[in-house]
Image (cartoon, rainbow, N blue to C red; front, top):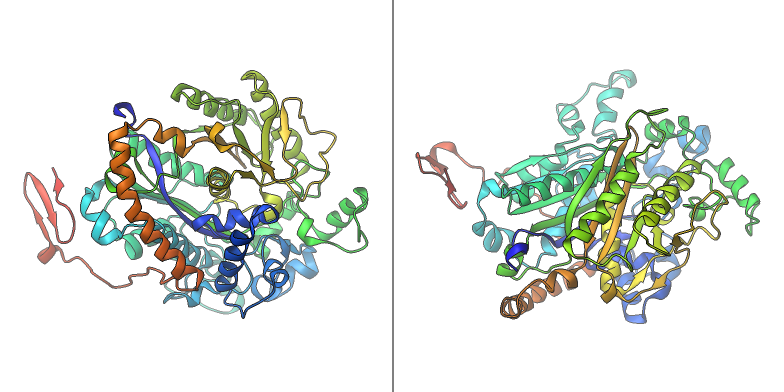
Length: 550
């Protein structure tokens, strides 16, 4: 274990997207619903029913409130600009019926901030350890990191939208509009109102690779021994007329006219009416991308800290590969950087000792004309270079929509779900690959596929964004990581893990019955520099924190 002590591992996840919440693999299970056993399906339906605050409903009624579907104009488009002017009516909305603002004492918070509070609470409670009493006292305060933020911003009326619109609609901006607009506010809220963190903080906006850019900060901090524990994530709520209009101008988003034309070309049943649920078709004869909203968060620590404290090991990371495109034809066009990031990611896992022959890649897969040919070429060329045949590829945005900043977080939750359940979610809105999709060395999983997880050492995440923001990452399996722990340490770890699992089971029982108790500590435990702080040449002492050694 000597060389792996500082290896970064995932010890908890939390969040929410159009498939449901992330803890206990619920959002993943929604993607593989048809392959679940009866007990798993019943638990998923119960969780979705509680999450949406619904009366006891039928399976059909519950499921139709999830994944990509027709936009609820009352929530997202009250002036009907998307519906009547732009003709864009499909999106990956959070499960219908959720009202995050009612789950805690929110004060005119933008939706992205509301989702941050939900996602981080889900992640912390899924740890199986109490942050305040069991973990925080173990950690040097300056070695805790929080890296979170959206790709575009907090864009609804309580954020940037209100700041820019107020005067035009005859109102004044509030004192909160400016601060709530900042992309770093997601991390700030986690520090100030959830963790009470004194450590490193920030966000790197990397377009649709933002989640991986934030993860990169955490991994570097852990490997450089600047961090021992980090919360990483992204939350984005882009389903609104302004963002929709922006993507409409790029011709990248699917409007109803394009969707209907696509259905006719593909000889779909009911092709006389738009079927919004199947609007996005990655790597198929498609009509464009669909917006989605999500918040995804992970707790990342060292293998040594996880073993010492009995934290569940869900996977781990080598590095995040980030590369630009060089000179570009246009800011939105793809380039050469993604070939470099994918090749580096595979190389990094090979150097660690992972087998790559049975590995999987979760593609960016936006569902646009341009992406299907360019990303398939990236993956095909990289597979050829590393002598991979039938490299298994899936993509999620046909079911979830494109969630912008958290998109790679959606992929990470799916990778963890694959190891826990042995099922690759299929690209099931795509029935046939488009003619310009390259697949000589690839196996596109158009249907869910059962796999032997013992053979899968690594799953690769891929994200591409405007401006040449390319991020790829190899996620290493929990079984591979545990194989690097000596038998004595492993036995002690498993004993401690049993207590962790008991507390996780308690959270599972509470949460599936609708008890979330979101953490939001406004105006609580405020530190007073006079009473709570003491500085000497040797250390800084702060009430309720471990001393900071100088």
